Amino acid sequence: MPERIRVKVLFFASYSDLAGRESAEVIVGSPATAGDVVRQARAMFPGAERIPERPMVALNQTHSKLAAQVADGDELALLPPMAGG
Amino acid sequence: MAFLVRRPVDERALIQRVAAPDRGGIACFLGTVRNHQANREVRRLSYSAYEPMAEAECRRLLDEAAARWPVAMALEHRLGDLAIGDVAVAVVAAAAHREPAFEACRYVMDQLKHRVPIWKREHFADGTVAWVDPTGTHAPNPPAEVARG
Image (cartoon, rainbow over all chains, first blue to last red; front, side):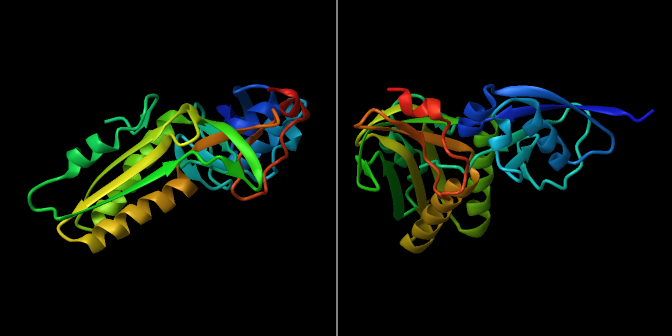
């Protein structure tokens, strides 16, 4: 029986508008990458499919590649293009 | 020390924080709210952030600059609703001489725009609101955005 991984996904700015929420719990089978979590999150909510397939992400508050492995309890943030300053 | 603030940026306080008798050059960049974007009149901006990561990323930027140049630095970015002319961000770099101060100030400001998870919405004079996308690539604003004031 494959292990299941729970990841807290955060949506910000325009992605929050598209998904209609600021966070969600996504459950994926192990092993999984950040990209796998993104794929699942985009399919979970009406409108979320308009989030780009390959958005910028941060894993546990650090910029990350979509190929990075996720672990149970991780926090994955989907980051629209940043616009500080 | 928090880098994100919800009150006016106090650039004088930042300058005082890094000023020292052996630092003869202080560079200060202020980013302020502009009244137009692509020929459209902007009334105000609202800034939001992934706050814990933005704080951590600002810390990393200043550490990187301190490793590259002999500088002391301070940084503040304001969140919430800002009016035209308000200071959104201040970056201050102090060094013995001006060159490292200019270079470190520019490095931190340029990196901040790419790496620190902060977003802003433009409120236009015609009542529309839009997320700012410097890359021009993200998903369009959902239709509900246009109707809002």
